[in-house]
Structures are given as C-alpha cells and as structure tokens.
Length: 173
Image (cartoon, rainbow, N blue to C red; front, top):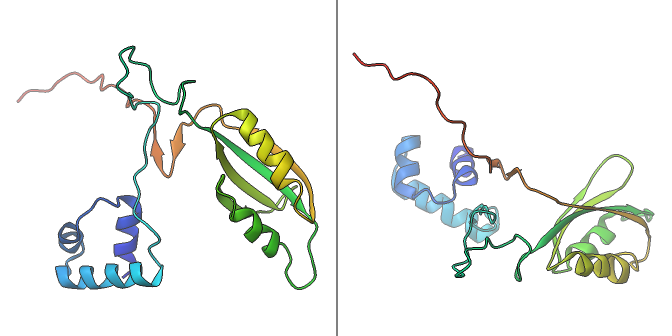
C-alpha cells in the first residue's frame, strides 16, 4: 500500500481514519500497516517542516528566532571528494561521516565531488571547525567545498513564500 506511505510523506499529521477514508480502506488495515512499517524501519520517524523565520520566540522585542539571535542555526552543504577503496567504494567514509551529530544528510552524488552532506551548527565558526577538525581529517577525504545557506525558499516540498494575493474581481450571481 504505497499510497499510505505517500500520504504520510506529504503530511505526517494525517490521522489513520482520514487516510483510510481517502484511500477507501478499513482503518484497521491502515493501523496495522503503519505499525508494521514503524516496527521494521520503513517509517523512520514522523516530522514537521518548520519555517523558523516565521517562529516568534516570545521575546519582548519580537525578534524572530534564526535571524542572527542566540539559538539560531547555520546550515551548510559540504561537498566531499573521497578516494575510493577496493571492496567498499565510498560507503565506509559516508557511514563514518553520517555518524557525526552535525551531519543531517549525507548522499553519494555524481559530479565533481562524491558526497554531499548537509551540516547544521550554531554559527559559521562551528561549521568551519567541523570541516577542518573532523571531516577533513578522515582517511581518504581528499577535499571539501562548503556552501553556506543564506536563505531557504523551499524545503521538503514546502514553499516558504507568501501566497500571491488574489487580484481577481469578486463575482456575484
């Protein structure tokens, strides 16, 4: 029932009864399948996509969290060139990099580099230290290229732009 997984991937907050209605299935079947997928690791976790630029942290000055204030996080994409090893290719280095808490994603990619990692830290200096002290010291890492995220316009399929206002004239019967 791929459709259940597709619905959950689009909106993890959907209830099982809602999904069952949408798909024309008994609620018990949706319950059973989701529980099995959670148990076997097909469903890794349920999560929300948060637009942190809109989150107001409740301070008296009304500053927005993530806009240069304490607690804000910096995101960087780090491209890593790796010397492959016989029998393991890039996998062992990718697994080692993936174990760092700073690393959110690690992908084997085509192009000028072998791996692309998404790294999050409290500031640019922390990410710089991660690259120079942890990432670049791993055996077979030949080079890195770091790209800092300046603004996020879309993440996980969700656009963070304001919707365009409807400029049409109202029609009355």
